[in-house]
Length: 358
Ligand SMILES: [Zn+2]
Image (cartoon, rainbow, N blue to C red; front, side, top):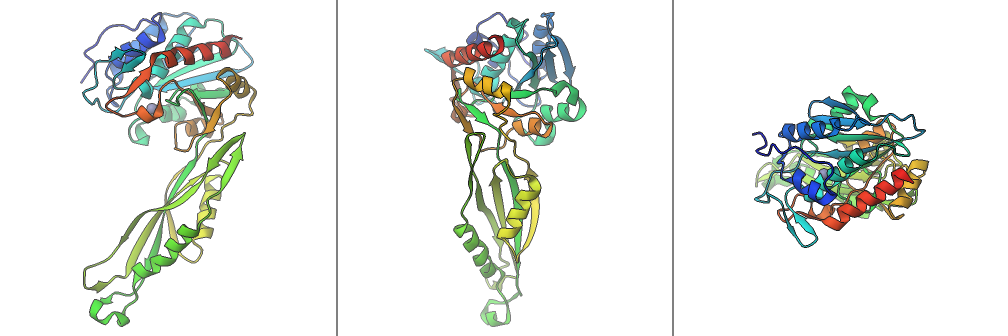
């Protein structure tokens, strides 16, 4: 399905109106082409920008030879529409699919791209597809793999909804299975067997007694967690089970590497058979970087740790410290009543403009 809205994007509109235009350009994951075309065409009107495209990913850059390069990134896709298009305004609020997550952030990127021909730092604007779906489809991941030179920067801001707060880095996540074994037997003669589910008791006790670490990095407090998220076991109502698997999820602070996180989990479950099934590295907030310090000051100086895994980790993997900062409200993302404050959009644009021009 292609977009029914062929209206070109006018980047001279104010941020709120531009957000509404972007929202009325449906772009559910996998269906971003029309919007990517419009974004690319709009950016090509500005001679101070070099515009490149890879798939439905658009990258625009200034090349002024400044000492520092800052990258602003946002995804073009949304989750499926929930009877919440077209957009409409009610007072200070703009309603519609993608208003918060994250076309308001994309509108701010586009406004800055169009209106800052002489920024104090060189700028890279990245617009990418398929953020809301499986990781292997993620456009930023494709760029990191196929066009990493386009993502070179000293500092990156991912304009995901953060309620106007700076959210630094992100935690890592590790999933593992702890497998308990026993001996199968008839439940009527249970002394002939060895119940694998009962062996899970020790695993659960260790989890219940586990003291998660709190750690401060660059002034942000990260809170770890180690939890059982699933338990599988049992054969039939009259059988002593010979296998039980407890799946655990470790959310760890970004000062641990993947290897250190795995070592820690293996220590917690010392003596048990453990298989790591899934990994995603965290990302350091990088708030001690000069560009980040200036950014923090310009955005009001308030920062908090990001607990979920986000695409900032992709920048971290490329050696680019990254934070989340966007005008949307993360609690409204993916909701039917999704909306964004028009004044918050204007405020985010103003703060970023001050950072990039002062
Ligand atoms: Zn998002």
